[in-house]
Image (cartoon, rainbow, N blue to C red; front, side, top):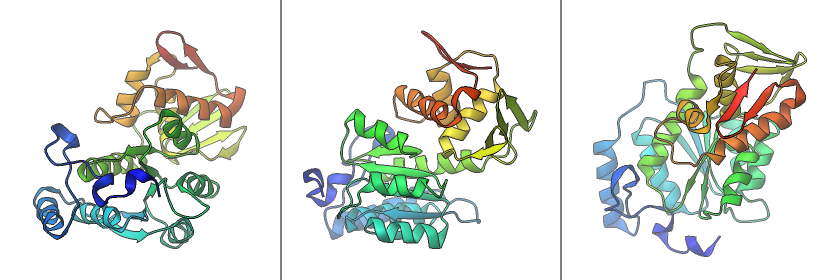
Length: 271
């Protein structure tokens, strides 16, 4: 566990912060009680079909508060405190999303667990990190994470990001051709599947969403900001380099068969 997580409220934004990042304290019984009242009063329930989230976080105070907000938002939540239990829970529960802390105890940290999960599952993953270094964020995305939240964070912001990822991963295909053929790559919107020379290629949720958006806009030069707004959403807090990381992953996985060009000074064009 890193030094930044030595106190109970190290992973949560302080109350009084303006805007959507307004957070809550988690320092004791009274604060936790206030948190519960606030969550119950403000969180809007989801549809009756409850999505399942596995939370892998060894700090029990942070884990319980995250679970509280997710449950108030209508999710079914399963808590685990280390990598082994987390992977076992993902295999057993087949969740709709995983919230994964990077700084797990033991020899297997969150980065390694993310890599292991990506070897056999495409479940969306949101990383929690106490480290705000760009290299850590890039590494997490390159390992297949769909999003990251830097501590201290607002539980409401985390819930909003979880909802946004699940909306995009389960959204029906847009009107238009369900299958896009791009060189050696086929993008099947209905099946949410990418094929290279007829063989399926495993893509993370955001990677596929980015590829599909580019395919639906073949021939258009799209800026990084346009791609962020369309694929990640207008309320996403990351920087534009996130697009570059995902493009690099698409090129790595799909190779020269993907006609994806860099438009210098603008962004990217497919086809």
